[in-house]
Length: 309
Image 1 (cartoon, rainbow, N blue to C red):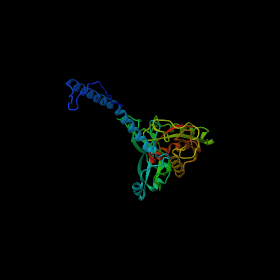
Image 2: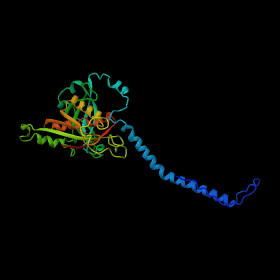
Image 3: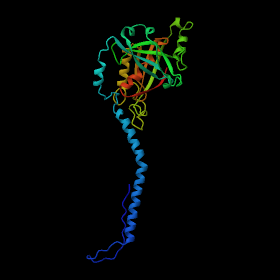
Image 4: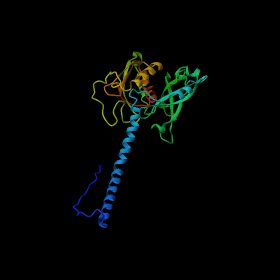
């Protein structure tokens, strides 16, 4: 902050009827000082303002969803619900889910006859997508084939709509290098593995983030939460941040037919985990791929998976 500096001088007293005019030198010095102060203020504002505006913008973007401490969205879904309740006749929507080069689930939707959607997964048609947009193919030969491998009920649309987990292949039918599912199936079907029917239980930990991509749910913007201790399996609005997402995800898993066996809050605010299993063979990994990113988007949140054990 700038402070005004007052200068005083010893001047001889004059008659009250006589006013002393400032000399040209004094007037010029005062104007020069005012100009210098104005330039100083302008320069300081130019240096400080951009960072201040950037900080305010970041804080605003992060604080809006952060105020939804429980993960509930303030979005009014009445308009969307009006359309989602419409009858689709003899057709259903089939959401084809596949894994990209970063091992992240993506999806695209197509229309299928209701009778075909209720049949075996082998009766569902193959489909394609642009692999150059997912880091899985060059731009001059970008077609990737997605092959249905597992079908689940769609908890987001309800009714007879379905989710379809797919393998990714090139046009010649070879699994893409990023398709780790295909070689896993070979191992599960080889030798005594298929005969012994090994059971697997998988635990997936994940952290919920605000849409600024930086602030975990329940964390102060640009800061840190209280020390670890009360959050693991905790209860209360000041401890279990994102419980609504966990509850929605859990119920969606049960509706879809996944073998979800449990869930709990983890040691960090905004961190959760869920368990799939016991499940035989490749089904454990298939089920673990489904649902979570879509459930997060319903609440305007992002998630990052930490590890699978």
